[in-house]
Length: 124
Image 1 (cartoon, helix red, strand yellow):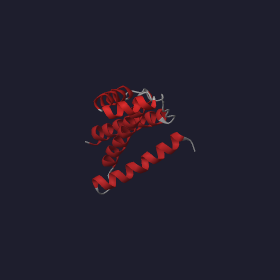
Image 2 (cartoon, one colour):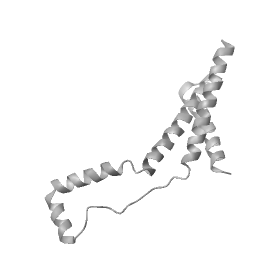
Image 3 (cartoon, rainbow, N blue to C red):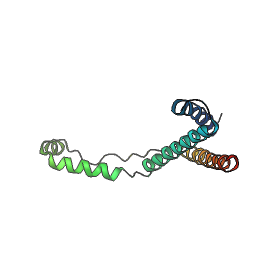
Image 4 (spheres, rainbow, N blue to C red):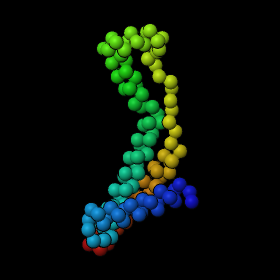
């Protein structure tokens, strides 16, 4: 099975579990709410992966390391005696599943939004 199918089936199974755990007895409207929440969770996970891939947090980490190395003189002397630099090796993380998570998250959120709007307007 492909990643998209696994993510989709896992998300739908998780939405059934969330609808039972949060809302009690099964209801179509409550299940659509759970599907929307799972879709938003997938979008947020993909967004965090994008931030990690773009090395957004590396500037903050480097600034904190630089600050603490200047404050802690003992570390400074150890680094000078061992001839170490404070710069770490460049490291880049790649998440190939990011696009699948984003696509499935958007699809689940939009489908849930459309179906719950149709359910509200046509049955009310």
